[in-house]
Image (cartoon, rainbow, N blue to C red; front, top):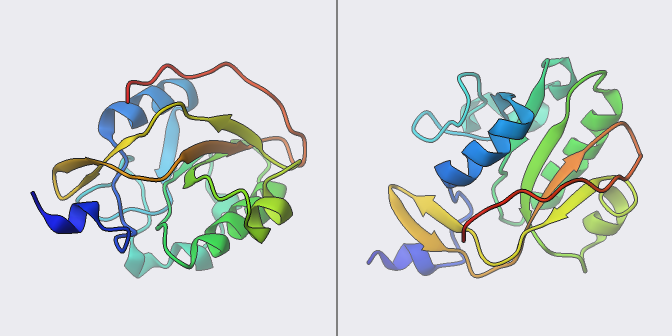
Length: 159
């Protein structure tokens, strides 16, 4: 087993394909906002070289998928998602992020502003073809219809 898989120092965990497929059945994503050439979940995507945070996401049509890097810059991705959701005329931005409800970005950009779906159990992430349970609770959240918070049906997942 690769010891890096168990490290919280990694911030580029790949979304498990089976989990993404279940989300994609609901949202029919058109774009992956944070990918690499080897792990992109959509035909169209931004890589690190494209600098997704400097792009105008609201100009991309359809529903957008985002599993951002989980490092110290996560707050920038959450803020950007919120700001772009206010500008986006159609479609949703769906994020998969850790549950860090004690952070200022949760209070500033998520609570009361996003539709939140809590996942039960732990998601098994991928890294270079390996599967590993990330030892943090995660949340799937979707920015919908400006600043309205709504509940929606749960997605069946296997953890």
